[in-house]
Length: 140
Image 1 (tube, rainbow, N blue to C red):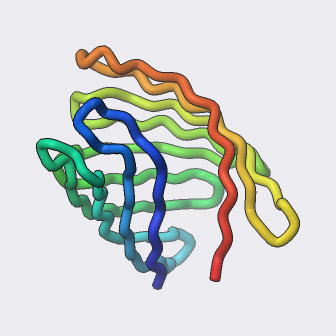
Image 2 (cartoon, one colour):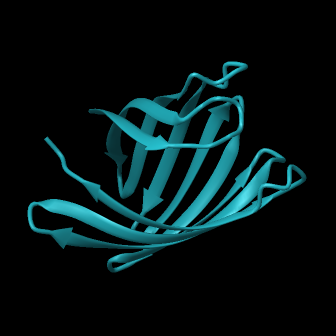
């Protein structure tokens, strides 16, 4: 069982300056297949109109290969593959767009760090974006 909070700054031109994601889930194995089921609430602070939405998700993994599905306001499917500390993923987001991500995870003392490149392609809203992301996380 796991639960957590993730936050970041955003700029959607709707008043939202912050995103806060509240999540919980449960992971287990069925034979050699990993299963992850969960719920996420995406909270966009001060957005007008309110852009908050929820989704449930299912993830399946076998070795270094994974596939996940999310169901909510924006359904999506994502496939992923890990090769050591480097991982790749591609997701298609319910007619909204697609995302390719390559990331590298490493240790920063007692923290987990990551460096990632994301290429988001929008299907019609004109919001194609590339991003380089550095992350630091800790587990309690």
